[in-house]
Image 1: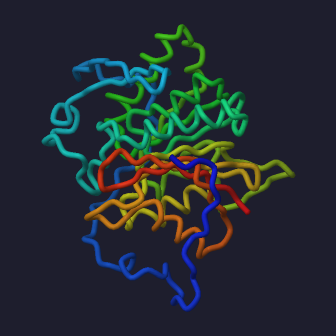
Image 2 (image 1 turned 180 degrees about the vertical axis):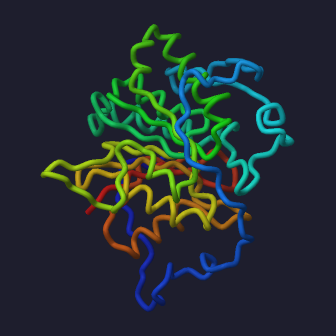
Image 3 (image 1 turned 90 degrees about the vertical axis):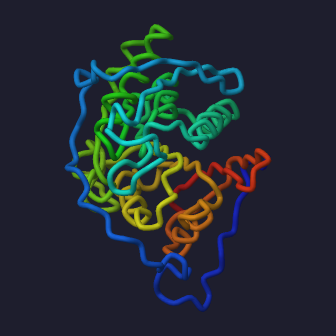
Length: 292
C-alpha cells in the first residue's frame, strides 16, 4: 500500500491539442438523452421495493448497506450497468469502500476534517462515503446519482438505516438527494454555479469536499464529470477525493487516464492517498485533487 505520495503525470510534450491520448478519441456509440435533473426527497422512498440490510466492516468501522433487486427497481436483468440508462448505482463497488477507509485514515492522521463542511458525493449509489461524512459531522451532505430510482430505493434507505443505527437522525437534516446527468445537474445542485470559478461579493460558492468512487470508467462521460467538479469547487480551498481502478479494461477509462486529462489543463494537482492491490490484475487507487 502506498500513501500520500506525489505523482508526476504523463508528459504532454509533442501532443496534439486534444486530450492527447489516442484511445480517448475512439468512437463510442451515441447514448439516449439523459433523464431530467430532479431533487428526490426523503418522503419518496419506495415502499414497494424489497430492501434488506446487511453490515459492512471497514477495518473496525461498521456501516450498513442495503440490497435491492435491479429487476424490481429498474425492470432490468441483474447487470453492472446499461450506458445511458442505468449507471450501476445498485451495486456496491469496491472503490466506495476504499474511499471510506481513505477518508477515515485522512481524518485520523489530521489531514482532513469533515465537521461543518459542505460535502457532495457524485455517482453515489449506496452512498457510503457520503454517509460517513454525515456521521463525521458534515453540515450538509448532498448525494447525486444518475438514476432517481437508485436514490429512492437504496441511497435514502441506506442513509436512514445508518443514522438510525447510531441514534443520529438529526444528522439527516443536512442530507439532500439529486438525480441527473453530470452535464446538467449543476443547474440543480444548491452550491454549484454556472461558471467553473465564481465569487460573488467576495464570498466563494461551492462545496468544501467532493467525493466520488468508480465514476471514471466511461471516457465519454469524463469531460462532463470534470466540468461539473470545477463548477462545484470552492476555489482554492476545496478538495476532491476520487477512488477508482487504475484501468477499466474493456471500457478505456481509469484513474491514470483521468489524471492525464487534468494534467493537460494544468490547473489541478493530484496526490496519491492510497493504493490497493488485492491480488487481481487491476489496482485500485484513491487520489486527492485540488487546485494548484
